[in-house]
Length: 129
Image 1 (spheres, rainbow, N blue to C red):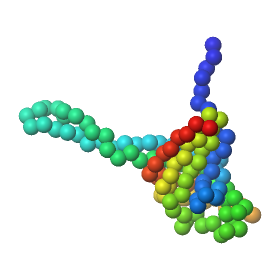
Image 2: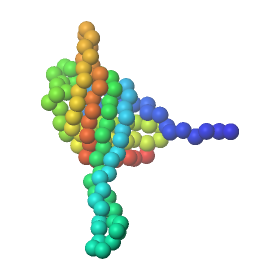
Image 3: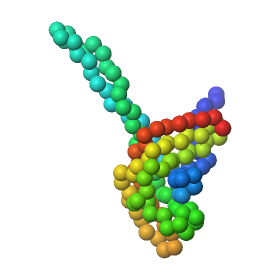
């Protein structure tokens, strides 16, 4: 019996202004759509549900700033409107319009590491590789 799984990620990184600024060890992505209920006069139950805004929440674990980003003086706290790129064997997923909502750091000598970063993204684009 064969099992089919999801292709694993071969590269996960943050990108800003066309430059790779940090590599990411792991991620968790959640898409959430809000809904609006349509009610009709005299009906005991809603007559329809309309899907409205779609948002993406991304939880990243262990971010390492690239050497180029460190040399450029990267400041994760001032970072906005960046992208998360996830490269898989069969496709590439890019979350754009990212804003961070939470950053948790763990310090080590000689390393610029953010232990956990939570982002929201406005768009998700998936292309075949």
